[in-house]
Image 1 (tube, rainbow over the protein chains, first blue to last red):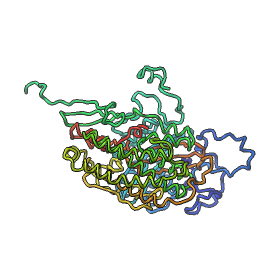
Image 2: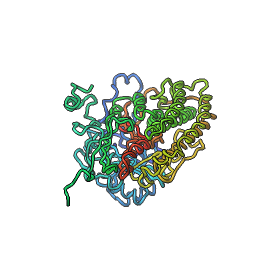
Image 3: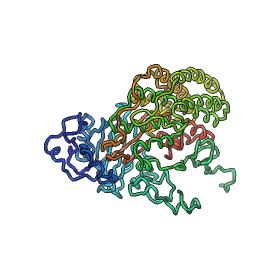
Image 4: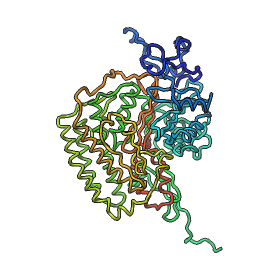
Length: 234
Length: 370
């Protein structure tokens, strides 16, 4: 969820954080400027707890506003980087869970590579996260697991509104329903998907509920009135 | 060529559900039939959609905890465990050993309760009336332990982020011991009723076959995967909550048909009782709640944590933006993914087998629709 435009490695932990047990953070250059413009991630957050009452206490050390991930260094990470070059934005570890951030067009080729050449034969999940204030509005997240290696990695890619990512059905059949759910909930259409319909909500529903600008109390009143014959669903 | 008569077979589209007793909830399957042969299916789901993932974004981490019980409502304890582990991972804390042991006991007890309900209703679908009475009789004993422990029988909300809310009651250990002792011979009793029953075998053998490769391709997990010969169980592969301390086996079978899935689940119940027997003998003393503070506010970040629920891999992908509410809480439900393989399993089979296959997938619509 970090600002992907930042140079690689800029997510190295600021000195005060105890999390860093991985390789030493990149010195000076990046870490020494904590005054990076607040990344959109933080702005997208709900209005944080009201400030005034906190003033009474000595200000606690401010937690970092971006995910404090450490670089992920392993044979697989190097192989992925070598093969996909600059289409891989970063390979990182957070809470000892590894993830790869790719350019949008590299996610499915990477899934295919992982399946065929690295035994990641089980696509666990596809989901998305909405960051409405960011230029690339959605995180698209693939979670894959390898039975042979007993290892799980996440593939993340950042896509703007209206972008149609390539479908993963050609690589993993299970992507079919998972992508339909992403479409249903976020309105992300997958190009080349064999059956791009809503899956949980009624076909004629308007709106995509898991977008942040979809009010939780909002509902499709017209659909409810027409189909259920009542004024409102609440 | 003579004109077509009514004797010519034509395709028939048949609607099964959403109000159909063997769909175990509100599942609608549109079947395309040629006589009795299934040419294809289309599942219509979402009748029970409550927007759980959206609700999560509007609740604090602790407030959302009871909601997860309402997804797979026959295995509420497993749902709660997965959620608590996911938030604990985000907070980078672990529940104290005593809490972990109690969690294991209750989760395994819930696995037994879930499998019992599956066995009873599955047998009922196939046409065997008796097992459901026996299964619910034993399940009642399990639910009584839940009730004594936390006051609820079904949607228990047994665990809290960081540990447990309640200390075990007096006599908890003895109740668990008694249950295991009582329960193990009962499994033999069920098997006596069913395993060699001619009708049961005829209805189940070589029905709804899904081999190991297809399982992986469809992302199918849990007993369905293990019945296809893949020895994979998250409790062994990536142990959580202290499962590495217990000695148990992963039952597997080779054919991947409905009968094998039945056998795997029967053996799993025995293994669950075995885990409980070990866990209950060595519940460590100590606190039941870790130090996590009153306000749960994980650092900005994300984590994916999954557990072996009775139905398969249940995963939670939680994203924190540093506030007290989850920014995103994705649930990866095993039933949803497993149901997708239904089409592959019934295509080419008989329409009567659809009921057997839906039963053997052990789906819970509350979890599929969320």
